[in-house]
Length: 176
Image (cartoon, rainbow, N blue to C red; front, side, top):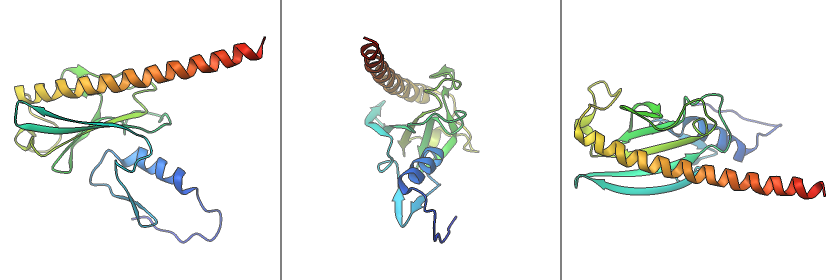
């Protein structure tokens, strides 16, 4: 818990929410509360999209895409984070078993987080909660996560390209 009584130079609350959320939102054990307001993934400013999927008829997952809107120095807090029974499995990563979803050095990898929530993978977690076991069930889950992640990154890339085109046209028109 970090608390302070501030008498002057108040921080911008929205900026504080954004910074703290982008840094710690991937971990369900880390509760972010500012002025008695809890910031969860639904209240996160960079919420992009959510989908639900059922895999192999008995694995229900919720996939949520978040963007920090600012590029971090590294991708340590970004990537795919798995929450099983509201507990983080391993660390967020762009590497799923034998699949690389994004290069951790890229701008996008340092900005986006995919959160996969489920209560149906307890039997697939290693005893130390650092990773999942290698099996067909997890391969099926990874395929769905890969498809969702690819869609999110393609959409983000398309938006950036559109923004660049608007900017380029504006600059072009200024020089006429």
